[in-house]
Length: 385
Image 1: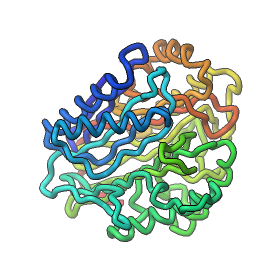
Image 2: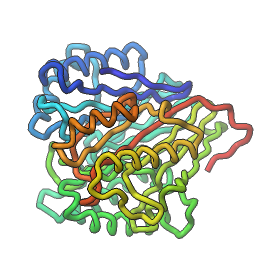
Image 3: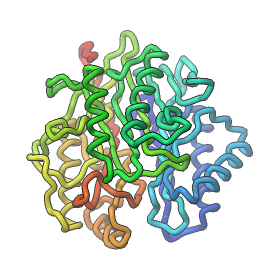
């Protein structure tokens, strides 16, 4: 299923979701990139980000078919996609694709390079400036095998250097995605590394309104190996245009920073034309930061959905405004049950790539992250933050 979601602003969200009951891997991937490529080319849009979800074993074939379709279409893409596992519900090995593209603007996109390798894109849109970095962990990885924590530290440090090289900073990063191999073995170490890095950057300063990025931190092997996959999206104002950024609060949950995890539950970003809501990876966690409904899969899904809805409502959005999401089910044996529950709760109406992955705690059985977009009234004053 191919879904296009957009507001009146710069960003268009493209998702290709696998139907687990249809077609082979080759047919699915070819159809996905024919439709993705066709949409992007018909709009003369610029690809900002691309993330492929599927099994590591299927990744070489997925990339091979992707490249064949792009060459056939004459579509040149400089930034390589991020490939993460993301195990699919279907046996094909392919779970889906999330991409973000930008409408034509007065300034063309510019590739971001580090040590001769293209690792991202920056572009000035009509509403804001955008910079996206893809799989920074792969660039940071040493030729020798370091510890998971060392690799995460190197990835964050390198992301900071690349941002600085491009005259940006981590204070302008609005969304991060961390995919961590064997997450349950070292999530505490990862949090310690991220906390230290964010403190040094001034992002963790004790102020609950500080704009710490929204984030997903989930199990995910990288098709290229390693412990830590990091993608990030930064946004900053265009001169003379409003950009209002708020950290969202959920009365049903405490702040993740309260229990040592450095991310915002969600951020809202209002431009002159659109409201974007970035909801972090969200699970069945309560006001004290504790897991609730341990062992009860359906009640954890319901609590997760309540938490997501509360964050959306804090920004004036609803579930119907979600334009891109990823669902993570811990246990493969729960897949069929999840599909039935999702149908009852309306989650199957959300453009979500469904995957099988460990969540950051052993007793968490489900996680959902989401991005919403909706039109907004023009801001009446310059509220750049």
